[in-house]
Structures are given as structure tokens and as C-alpha cells.
Figure 1 (cartoon, rainbow, N blue to C red):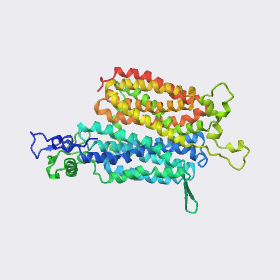
Figure 2: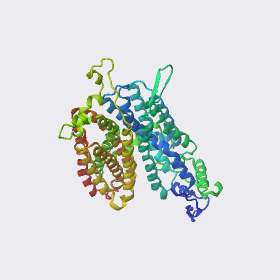
Figure 3: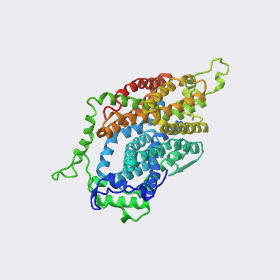
Figure 4: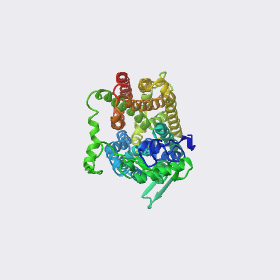
Length: 534
């Protein structure tokens, strides 16, 4: 990313305004330019942004290793994978309300350090329900910092840089999807182990992996500590002098000039919502504020927004279901296929399907009580054989998915969001439907990689299309509702996957694949609304 500290690139205060004239936020932040401060903020936000990725992804990689110790049945695995999303859904709106009242920075720091502590204690959990509780608590905690972080970063950039910076931010955060499997490849195959409190707490490799995964929120807490409160928030709270100090610091770091050279001298106090009269207090009751935070939602319900928003929410529900289910269960599926004994099918002229392979090893790979089937009455669970290829394949798949998203971001303006959405939905649906017909494990993994990439692309595409069907005053609310729907899709998908897998191996693949194909049909109706409602 290019750092430009040239003074010519710094927007000037309009000449028709005196040096003492009060200016609004956009004018003030644009006058700070773009340079060292902005780049440092972006770099410092990376570990904080990776926190959500780590919290929602690590469970997928420890499930094969922790199966016996935590007594993980199929449904327990699904519940564990869904628990973080359940926590995020429970309190997401409350996080936003609190951030709008007490500030971005300190709430972000509180969330990060709390999540780090929660992850440390979770790594020491010796039972399934204790670990499940910590994962749920982690979801409650981490649901806020991610949304706060994106808002925090946006409020340090002028309009001319904001979109590009948020695009770069999202791309850098997406690299966390590669970091998790890469870290699991380095740690989980090891035989590391140590104990504490006279062997009361035993840390083997998968617990050490969870302990290391507590580093991103802790590092995010450390790196974000030195940055100031959002100047936009300070201005909305009437703290113009504090906001001015922040702008001066930004200006000095970006241009290399002294803070006194910053051209803006007076800031205009900004308010959120309707203008306040002298008789109205700036700070109203928390109960009224929380009630008002839900009010914009009702304006989304009447026509002409109801049907297009219904389509958007159905699509993101399906896309997030398809993406998060595959991400959560991919390591488990790879382990199952790696444990399949090819000698069992050598004499058969028919190549076994993927589902036949899964069913052959269902008891040994998922279950418990496998030892009893072998006549062993002392051991009730046999650990699965987890090769390093599991983590290597997961790393390659994650890297290919992130790369695909980058490439689509480059061509999106040429081909259009609608075309990308339609292609990704129908292609993702076909890939899901074709999983059971994969002639080999390699083809299966290629299809899994395509599914993660395509469903991720469709999620980003449909989120960005909200701009075309919802007016500016309702877009923030619409995005919040849509993301909530997507998280609910991830939650229900992870709960339904093991249930459907117990019914029939084909069932979850056909359910998600058919759902994505239905969304392809629904997406064709969005064209009649694009650009007409904003």
C-alpha cells in the first residue's frame, strides 16, 4: 500500500471559510491526508481482525484430536461448531448500542483482552461442557469487537480513502483463514505435552494449539492500545477539543509537519439522528437509546423493501451455511477419507463413492465405543489417525479460496456483482451436489475448495448488493440484519449437518446444494430492483 505524505495530496480547508470557521468531520479528516498513521492503524488492526477468524475456525481442527478426550459424538461436534455463532447472535445488537454510547476504543480493547482470557481458560477445559461454555462465551465477546473495529478504522479515513482502506482491511483479515490451518499444521501433529497443578491440568498438542490461538486477541489488545479514540465519536459527543488533538496527531504523522500546522482550528459538533434542540439533553436514558437502535428495522419491512430484502437474506443464509459448514467439517471429512482402507475395495470392480467411504469408517472415525467392537472392554474410544496431510490440504484449500476472492475483487467492476453472484451460487450448488460422485479423494478436495471459495464470493457479492436496493439512511441497519441472518445460517447449518449425516450421507450435501440452486433462481429477481430503490 502506498504511503503518500506529500503536502500537495492533503485536502485543504475551503478558501471561503476563515481559519476560525467550524468544519465538519469529513473536511477535518480529509485535511489530515493519508500516510504513516493510516498504515500503522491498518497493520495494528490485523491481529484484532484475525480474532473472529480464529474463534470460529479453531474448533474444526481440534475435533479429530480431541474426539476421545471430550467424548465427541457427531451432534456434539455440530453443537461445538455452532456455539461461537450462537454467542455472536445473542448480543450483537447490544454491542453496537454500547459502542455508540461509551466509545469505540476502550470497548474494543475490553473485548479483545476478554476474548484472550476466555480462550486461555477454554484451552484448559477438561470436559466437553466446560469447553462448550467457553466457546459460547467467546462468541458473545468477539461478536462486538469485529464490528467495532471496522467502524473504528473507517472513522479515521476521509471519504476518498475509506472504501479502498476497508477493502484492504477485509483482504488482510481474510488471510487469517490461511493462518489457522497453517498453525494447526505446525502444532497439532506434534507430541508436545506438559501438565500443571500435579497433573490436574494436562496440555497436549491440541490444547497448546488453542493456547497459541489466544495470541491474536492479546496482540490486538497490545497493538490497538496506543491509538486514540475515534475522532468521529468524539465529535458526536461534543468533545471537539479532544477530536482536534487526534486530527493534529494524524496530520503530523502523515505529513511530517508540526501539529500546529494543521489547517483546521475549530470543529463543528455533530449529532446522530435528528438535530437536538437546546431543551433536549445530549445523553438520554440507556433504555430509550436501546429502543431507538431497533427502530430503523421496522422501516425495512414495508414494501418496496420487503421482497428484495427477503431474497438477500435467504441468499446470505444459504451462502453462509454452505461456507461455514464446509469450513467447520472439512478437517473431519479429510480425516475420515484418510482413514478409509483402500484394500477393502481393491477386489471390487466398482469404485466406492465418497459416502460409501464415510459409512465404512463411521464407527471408528466418529464414534466412540469403537474398541468394544474389537473386543476391548477397557478402552471405550480409539483415537483417529490424523496425518499431517489433513492440515496441509486444509491450508492449500484456504489459500486457494482467499486467492479466488482477491481475483474476483479485481474483475468485479468489469463483469458486475449480479453476474458474479449468479455464477457463484449455481457453481457452488453444483459442487455440493457433486460431492458424493467424486471419483477420488483428490476430486473431493478440489470440490470442497471450490465450495468455500464460491460461497465466500456469493456472501460478499450479496452483501455489497444491499447498496443497490436499500436507501442510504437504512443501509447500516440492512447490513446488520443481513449479517445476523448469515450467522444464523452458519449456526443452523452446523447443527443440521451431523443430524442429516446420521440420516444419510447424501442428505446434507443435497440439502445445501439444493438450497444454493434455489437461491440462484431467487437472485435472478434482484435485477428488477437494482438501482430503483436507493
